[in-house]
Structures are given as structure tokens and as C-alpha cells.
Length: 193
Image (cartoon, rainbow, N blue to C red; front, side, top):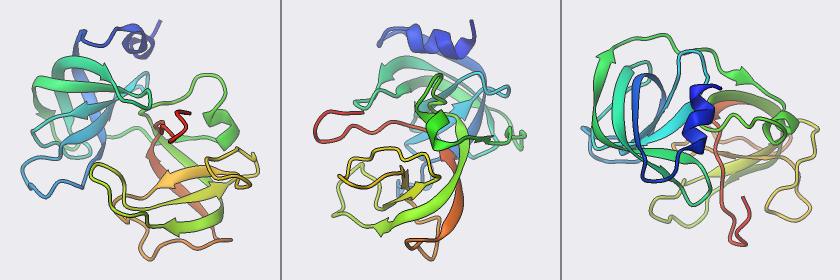
């Protein structure tokens, strides 16, 4: 059994210590330059990934030690609320993202909280909902031909959040793109993940 499977079996409230996690993505939505609220780490061998909520700061490529209380987000992703931690190395190599079809993302072992790369045709360009605290500011959909059902009737594809407007200018329908990010869940208003 891998460490990642063990993390998923631990109950909320369990104490978890990660001695060597590589920061793969950091949040950019906190105006405080000394804290990034949360970031994602994964094992150097990609056997696990987890979202880390912290009031410290970590950059992509940092090797970190984090310890704290394990929780589950409303959408079902595992999250570690840090009680203790630190950066143990800078400039650590990040494993290349896992290239995955959209069908692979929803069947079998889902690579939650791991760095992945997806591709496809943009079926709906950037959408900018009314700002809601704690929610991404924009998203779009891409379809690689897998035909995944979305939360929008009649629309197929994978919802890609671009909360920091990394894609500048925004994408438009019918463009073919690839996108690298961290895989996660979303809870719809109907309670579906």
C-alpha cells in the first residue's frame, strides 16, 4: 500500500506528518505577501498529493516538512491544516505532470491533488462569475473527445479553473490547448462531486 492510499483511509482529525513533500502549486489569492493560505504538495515519486492549509509561505519547488490535522474539504479532497512545518530545501525538482485523458481522470485511481496535464478543444471559453470569497474567479471547459458530462446541461468536457488568470489572454471556444494544474473535486449546488 502506498502512503497516498493510507492518507485517504485516515479519518478527519487524525494527526499527519509529511517529511518530504514537494510544493507543486501555490495559491495566489491572498493579498498578504508573507502567506499563501494554501498550497499543494506531492511525494517526489507522485505516490500521494495533498492540499496544505498554512499561514506560512511556500513556493513551487520547495521541499517541505508539514505536520497537522487531516480534514476533508466539502468536495471530498483531503487537506492538511498545518500546526508545524518548514522548508527543508529550495529548488527541488518537481516531477513532470501526469498526462491524462479526461476519461482516465474519472475512472480507476483518480489522481487527486497531483500535478496533471490535460488537453482538448475549448468548448466554452472563460466564464467570470460574480466574485465569491474563497471561490476561483474564472473557469472554462475543454473536451478531449471523452464526452464527460458537466454541471451544465448539454455541455461536455472538463471544467478548468483559472483563478489567477494564468491564461492571459483568456481562451476562446474552439481553441485547442493543454493545461497543467492540480486535480481536485468540486461540489455542485445539487450536492454532486
